[in-house]
Image (cartoon, rainbow, N blue to C red; front, side, top):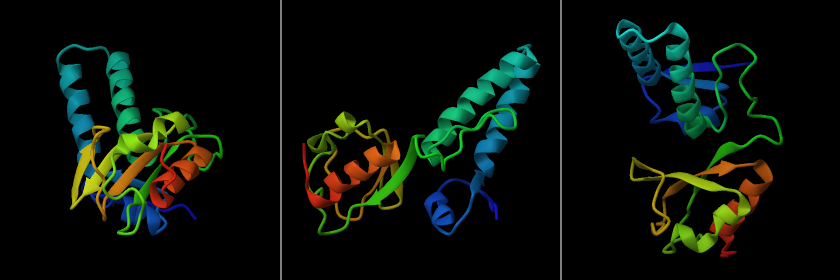
Length: 163
C-alpha cells in the first residue's frame, strides 16, 4: 500500500516516514514553488525555463528531505528502495554513543562517500553543518549516501570507529 501524507512543513518528516508514509508532501514548499513559477512566468520567462528551474529546486530540496530526487514527469523519479541509490538516514546520537563530544570531521564520513546534510538539535535543524560541529547526546544527524556506506557511517558514529 502506498501512503501519501500532506503536512504543513517538513518539521515532522522523519516521524511520518517511520510511521510508514511512502511520500510526505510539505504544503509550504509546494505552495512556494507555485508562487515562484507564476512570478517567473509573469516576468516573461519561458514555460520551459520555469519548469526547469522548479524541477531543479524541487530536486535539491527533496533530495535533502528524503534521499531521492523527484522529477517533473511520471516515471522520472529515482526509487528510494533501489539498493544502489543514495538516500537519507537519520541517526540519533544516544547518550552513550561514541560520537558524543566529538566533531563531525573526526569520523571521516566523506571518505566513506557519506555527507552530513543536517544536524537537528533541540527542534532546530542546521543544514550543511560545519565539520567542526561538536555532536551532543540527542542530536539527530542526517546522513546522505548509499545504503552500505550509510551502515558504515552509522557504526562509526555510534560505536566509535573514528577515522
